[in-house]
Length: 414
Image: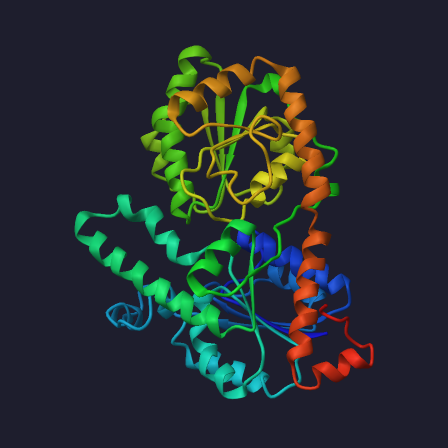
């Protein structure tokens, strides 16, 4: 099929779960023979490394620049009731709208819009064309504002609440227009159904199991591995909780425990705030396998659900026992005590870590069960097949789509 796929960021390097999802799905669909034009509205220029990673997967790569976040237009748009901030900072882009309108003159089997917040430049063109399209959501975006509410100055909190209200209205407006809606897990799909009144199809997040299958944890290293994209407020809050409350309790029982902090946009001032030699401030790593091989546990003390959970799946694939919270495991069909160990308060998490580090046999049990779960349920090939089934239904709705099905050129959506 010919696919027009839009993105509000370059999916390489894979510095976040969303980018990793995009890259691996692009790769999986390209391997299945689909011809993809990727239209990217990017805040960073297209570098040579990204070009070399993406162009072999695509029929065409189009990258248009996004205006700076502190642009006067963004400041003015923040006062407009109709668009929430994320929709206006990623929209109101005439050059992107014109490019999209030009592309719509071509024949497409699938039009895929990634994220409701990127939809504004495409809305009028899609309404005028009457073409079917899909929207893929990686979170319930209207809930993400709650993550940072308590971190904001008091005077900004009313505006944040107002913007969350705007986003729920915007999200409903966008998803009700789409012919197909995709969520990353059943929990988000059900939430979308509740506030839009329409179903959402689940296309899971995955992991390249073979890439990690030869990695094993090092139980005696006493190193905890915490990974996240620190542009996301939930990851910042998780790290603060770990360093302020959980790790001090662990160190009372086991002073040898270390914490390796890995991820994009790690605040540099935090190294001064928590100046402890047992904390390893590593930052972004394109390949985690060597660090995974020298770590004992993967630690994800998340207090808010949502997100792609790809780093957690990768840790499971690499054989690292996982310690997390109910919210950290939300959206995955994993069981506490079988695939991971979890708790939702400081004392419980500190006790789990302390006990688990002294029981290598229990660590191996968790590792084996989680690896089997990932291998059976979350390989990227399965995710690509799920997305392909959405494509089949969408293509059947396109002009001449039913004729394509009748002639056997497309699989039936039934």
